[in-house]
Image 1 (cartoon, rainbow, N blue to C red):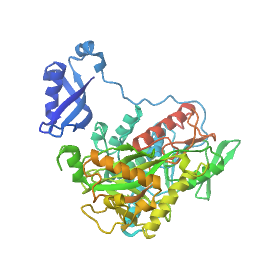
Image 2 (tube, helix red, strand yellow):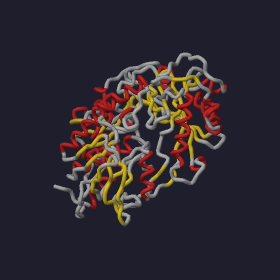
Image 3 (cartoon, helix red, strand yellow):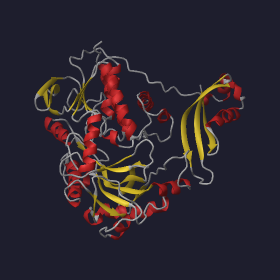
Image 4 (cartoon, rainbow, N blue to C red):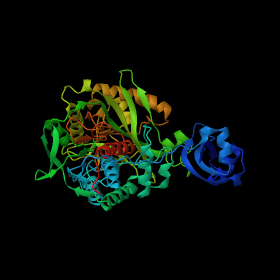
Length: 527
C-alpha cells in the first residue's frame, strides 16, 4: 500500500471528496484507486477563518509500482504486531498479574493470547459493581477504600476521558488501539490524532477484554488484594491474597497503578528496590466549554470539530514548570479518593464530550528536593499531606475546596459563583486555596494563569473555577528493573504507571505488553 499525507478538506467538504484529492496529489485517475483507509485525521485550526481537516491515508492502487519507483518513501510502513518467539524454560505456576488497569489488562491479554493462562488479581470490584459504588460516592459521599476511581476493573482510566494520546513512539501503540477497537471502542480511535474512548464506552470495553482473557484460559479474581510475599534467596516463591491465602508463583507482574500506596510499602519492606521520582500536583481548572471552543476554533460549536482541547505549559520565574494535564473537553471534575480522610480530584468525559464545562489538571512540578526526606516513599506522604488538607478544607465530608480564578489571583476566599458552575460531586466548599498551598505552587500558578490567558482566551477568566487538589498525576516512586524487565527480586516484574514507567492509558498498555513479551521470551506456555 501507499501512504499519502497532508490531504486537506474544508469544513464544508465531505470525506467522499478524499478519493479525488488523493488522485490529484498522486497524478493518477480516481478509478486507479482500488481502496483507501484513513490512517490519521487531525484538525488544523491555525487559521480560524479557514479551518481544515487534514488526513493521512493508505491506498491500494493499480499504479503502486509506478508511484513507488518515483517515491519509494510513500510505501506504507508495516505496523503489524508480531508476537515474540516463545522461550523454553518451564514456568512452574501460572503467571500472576496484579492490577487490572491498562497495564495489567494488556499484559494479561498478550499472555492469554500466547497460551499462558494468567491469573489477574484485582483488589477492587468488577466494573458493573464498581460503577454502583462510584455513583453512591459521588451522590452521597459513601466512600469505599477498595472500590473507587483508583481501584477496580480497568483501573483509574475507567473513570476518565479514555484519552489515548501519548508521546511515545512504539509500534505497540497501534496494537493497543486495535485491541480497544476490536472490543468495542469506536473505530476512529485508530486514526484520530487525539483519540479518546469516553468513560461510558470504556466500561464496556474493559469488560469485553476481560471476557476474552477468560475465554483464552485466564482467570480474574476481584476483591483480591496482594498482601504478602514469600521470597527465598531473592527469588519469588509465593504471594499472599487478602491476608488469608497463599498462591505459588514464580512470575508476578506488578501492574499496580500509582495509588496502591499500601502495596508500595509492602514491596519496600519485602526488599524490592525503589527510588524517588518527580511528579506534579495542583488543582482542576474548569471553564465553560464554549469559551474553549471559541478560543481554539473561533466558533462556539461545529459538528465536525467537536469539543476543543488545549495543552499548555509555562516555566515560571521561580523555576517551576506549570502545565495542563488530562484535559477533559465537555466533562466533569470527579471525586477520586482512594484513602479514607483524603480528597483527590480527577477529570472525566463521556464519549460525546457534550457537557457544559471543560476541565483539566493545572499542575506544578514536584521534585525529590521537595520531599523532605530520602525515604523512597516520601513523595507519597507529600501527596497525602495535600489530600488531607483538601479533606479538612472541604468540611471532612469528601466535598472539595473551591475557589474562583479571580479570587485565587486576589488571594481572597470565594463567596459566590459566576458563569461557571462546579461539576464536582459530592459538592464543594468555598475556600482560599492560594493561602493554603505551598508558596512556590501558588506563585507559579498565579504567573501561569496570566500567561495561559493570553494563549487561550478566558483561561484566566474571573469566573473560571479551581477545585482542590489534584495529586495523582503520576507515581512518586520508580521501581528499577533490569534488561529483562525484572525488579530487584527475581520473578517480580514492576510495570506501568505505579512502577514509574508510563503516563497514560496507551503508554501503560504498551509497557504491559513489553513486560509480557519479556516473560514469553524466557518461558514456554501451558499448551
